[in-house]
View 1 (cartoon, helix red, strand yellow):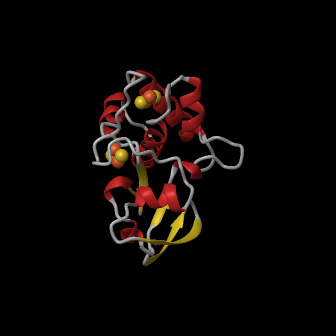
View 2: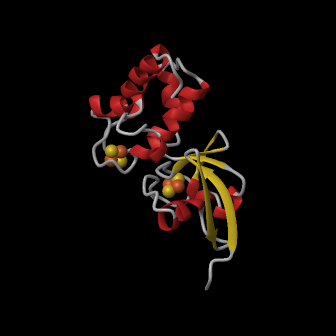
View 3: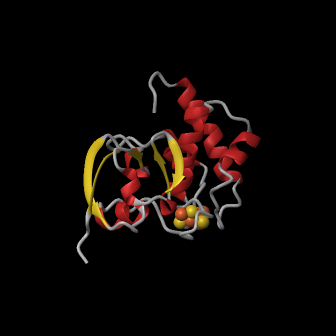
Length: 163
Ligand code: FES
Ligand code: FES
């Protein structure tokens, strides 16, 4: 069956247009049509956060959004976090704190943490744990992730530009 719906969006500050089926998820569009493989499919039912993206300044599970619903939307994915070869502070701190093992959950955590810090630049540990509660990791035990986010938050508060 031919893809039928034409959708115009902005992804990581670039205009992006695609065709999709009416029942196709935004996650599938990102991965299969646009080659943005950062968002992962863990569960497909909104329970794991591996597919997290930011759509119009809201953190969403892209497995629960239809591609067609992104019409006119502004999308941020993990691919947009680094600037050239300069990692985002969250990415840098995840590496330094060994906050990833298999890495399946990592793009989702990074995007969720970016959204959290945009709304709360100086979160407590409890606020970080609450803010990332929609993201599951079966490898790290979460403590390293929380420390990486705390550390990155400090770097970002001290920076002279926004991330
Ligand atoms: S794949 Fe979307 S929440 Fe798990
Ligand atoms: S690093 Fe493996 S699921 Fe989080």
